[in-house]
Image (cartoon, rainbow over all chains, first blue to last red; front, side, top):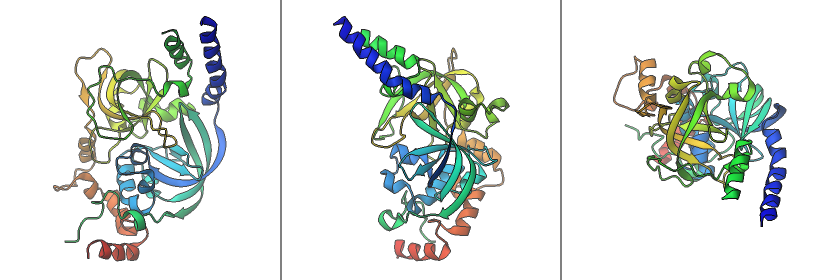
Length: 153
Length: 193
């Protein structure tokens, strides 16, 4: 029994070591294409599923959250979220102007990728191109949340 | 028990995927937000500037409010990302943690670990915080006061997000959908016939 436990622990450690090493590693230069999203709504499901918290349906909410200091992420084409720590010269990740102006836009960005404890972090060195809003989610979801657009007076 | 202790050791060695499911709910008084993957979580941690922690780019005072702040959990060295404060008004948690920059704190709130969403790992909704050893908790609800202090000319009864000049300038330029004012007008006509 004792050796079985020892084998289990050894297996866990062996399986985990490469991940641990990479988590603490230097950054890796990457080019990512993805949408600037509001990570709280996307991760928590507070406004609905992931498909409802991206694109045009969620644009106003994404701006509110970005201005409100909710962390911004790049939702990559690979489905991974890259938490944005800096965009070119602007390190104001807590409600900064640059990230606000890019809310919901799909961009291609060069940067340095870091991984730690299950999260991806990106320091964007350059926005190479900006396609604007590409997901027309309002066709399926209206606006999210539904009070984003006030009733005309 | 031996395996549990072994897992704790691996957590302390910095093996994150094993630690994700750890239960930090003991003693938590966090209120539910009825989120799919929420778990009450109360733990001790060091407040860090995340950009500094990740890359070594470390200005004084955790960036003096410009940057996102994280929680390096004391028991396992895991970097927890506080995404949200305790106000239901589209507000983050960095302002709440800034007074504790570099300090050891105790926090209470909700942890999000959702295996169905890539990256939804070690995401935290902060409800209250106190320095380790302090008696009184500080509720994580100062964001709107900070916003009002930074926007003294913005008056009215509407919530901050309806009065924010930066957001309203973006809305005036590209609309609520971000697709241009013509698209917006047509959509609003459908929405409110």
